[in-house]
Amino acid sequence: MTIAPSENHALSLRVDVTVVGAGLVGLAAALACHKAGYNVALLDSGPRLTEAQVNADANSLSDTSSQWDARIYAISPNNAKWLAELGAWPLLDKARLGQINAMQIFADEVPLSLEAEDESADCLAYVLESRALAQSLHERVSMTGMPVLFNDGCTGFDSATTTLHLADKRTIQSALVIAADGSQSWLRQQLGINVQKKSYAQLGIVANFSVAQGHANVARQWFTSHRHDGGTILAWLPLSNNTVSIVWSVPLAYADELLALSPTAFTQAVMQAGEQVLGDMQLLSPPVAFPLSRQTCERTVQDGVVLVGDAAHQIHPMAGQGVNLGFRDVIDLMASLQTKNSYQSLADSRLLKAYTRRRKADVLSMQLLTDGLFQVFSSANPVLNSIRNTAWRVANQGLIKKTLLAFALKL
Image 1 (cartoon, rainbow, N blue to C red):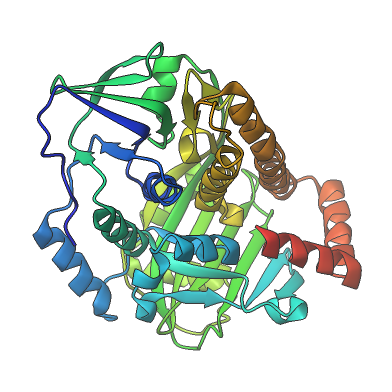
Image 2 (spheres, rainbow, N blue to C red):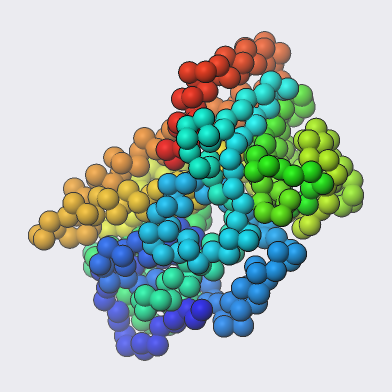
């Protein structure tokens, strides 16, 4: 795969849509716009992949014994179908693709089980490495021939003409700019869009393990509230070849303790927290930690720019919906643009208002769900814990359980 850098040294480039940010959401957005028939330019301040790096990644991914990527995503079936329509999903190495057929959720030893077959679904989610999906998206982008400018940072944005000024003095003018440039979005800052950020005072610790007993394509999650400094959330996601990826959300002080452990001691802590349900575990990659926070923008559309993905919102990772939300941003944006008549600009206020209406309920519901669960399970109040456990038992009954499963499958 060759990522096509811009060979055009003209002073300016004119396209219908410029996508800023070549992460997973940005790459998918560029492909979706191209598929819709728009002229697209993709811009990223980071270096482009070299042929050697791409081949090295491909060889690494084809070797199922190689080290797994620390960044693991659970992609919803609907988003997997959409990625297939964009031509990226078929390029994935299926040997490293995991699948979630059921979920077991434990809240202070009160279990809740959700199974795909109860709704006649093939699965609840697919589990894969960030680099695997990025590689397939990059490969698909290279097939389109769209101009892709890597290692080109922006130095200015003219909102009157929707023009990006690049560090090398070139410019890109477009009818619409999609900002997929992450939680610290440069474009969002240029527009002066305010952000409300809430720290959870926790770190998310991620690591990969081989397990002695087969995971049977079951994802497992433990909510605990026994610590005085807040609760913990431990998720085990099934990968291929008896491998699991964990995300352990823990208070800062506890995170420091865990990260200071030897690999053996850390593995024992993970096994104990997960009740040793998969037997002995072997650490495959060093644990990596990142801070957890919720981030909400006062608006996601301004001056011909649409914020998507982490540039628009961040949620707690407990539901595994961060990148899925970003993909749904793009899907809803494309649905709004499809209603455009021949006299409207891509940045027409009516089209973009329709987009914001489409996204508001989805994003708000996921923020409320994750934030609410965090608040409930981080409390050490015994009365609240008793009420919570009673509610959890009720949720395990037929109708509520069926509703939860239907909600998970529609994401």
